[in-house]
Image 1: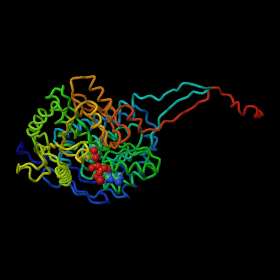
Image 2 (image 1 turned 120 degrees about the vertical axis):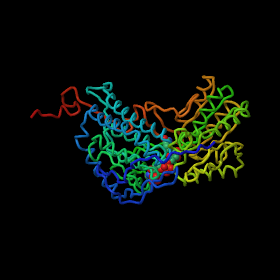
Image 3 (image 1 turned 180 degrees about the vertical axis):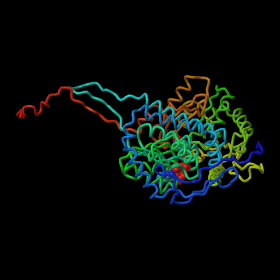
Image 4 (image 1 turned 90 degrees about the vertical axis):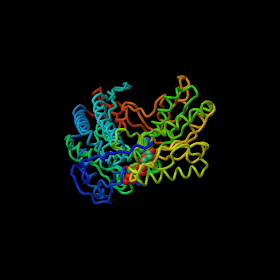
Length: 507
Ligand code: NDP
């Protein structure tokens, strides 16, 4: 199964670890951050993250820059130009971004290149949305011209996880800037470098100083500062459910809007009438691409009873053919995990599942290949033989671990699929479109894929239900999430208000 890779770590001039604070490159004064290349454990950079004081300086610069008429009064098409220039920079630097992100996360170069290009597309999209969104003249109910217009919120904090940094950064930074805000980005401590590269590109694109800061640093220190600070008008968070819950509590205290993109335990569903080839390829991609480190990973597979005994062994054989290898090897399908500590967490989940009585169908260990011995690798793993109530069917593993369950009919499937705290995504394989539609409408998730999985479009809103979060990102309305709606009434009579008109003496 394992392919030996002869490719060395992608050779790249990494960001030096200085922070981008209010438009200046500064050495941080917070806790030390160590970025490693998880494919072989070598150190990328050790640098000081942002302290509270660094964060406060960034907030002060952001406040001044956002209030400056040079930014605030830009016409939509003028502000959009900034986003287009950033998009151009991301595209021109896609290879470099890809290598940096591969060094930081261990994701394959193929995947990180796609993420860099998708980030460019996100900036371009929100530039176009900005240019084409209208304020509204509302239906008149009196002698006033009534309008609904949109204002920036002011300062936005974007807090992102380590799994797809450049894409999740762009998904927050692009609409927030387009909406006229200043943005303070706090990337995850396991993958901080590519966000610093984004800062370089934004600076090169000529965005006025102070409008964008990148503050790697401990979540509990700098992340917490951004959430609690009175000048921050919105937090856009992607990460784990417990962190999201904590941020929601703090936001409630400030009465601050917050968007939360959280974890998942998404069901993939294969009916007896499905095309088995489509289903197997889709299920494998759904769980094992990105080494399972994806919020939308299809981690619970439901297979209809009538095909269970033929489908599952075929699926297992295909999983055993997945090419596990170095992220720089173009043939690799399943690379390493983000960090040895994360692999240890995945191993703990699998050990607990086995202790719970799960049957191991494949994987459940590190690869034998000596060339991969220094990296945080873990084989694609498939488990069965536990009910949907087992911990391994409830807890997010965020790794290459699939649990397979049988189902009888539509009613049984809907009950089992919905019996979970999460509600992020779902995949259905069937040749019966009306059935797919019924199931898609009945499953409580933010996204449903029919005969496919993990397809994405920036123009289609994304987000979760239940413990998978609240609010939506992407789509045209994704820009409005970073604005406040304001009503403007302009009198059309030019006459004194009748309520006080008879009091006037004409002097
Ligand atoms: P965490 O919640 O641990 O961290 C996410 C971010 O929050 C990091 O930048 C982290 O900083 C920061 N943070 C941690 N504690 C605080 C705090 N008290 N206040 C403010 N910020 C804080 O998640 P992971 O990084 O482990 O990411 C994996 C999770 O993200 C998974 O659950 C996954 O499902 C979810 N996710 C959801 C997606 C979605 O769109 N729904 C997409 C991708 C991932 P630091 O790194 O320094 O701790």
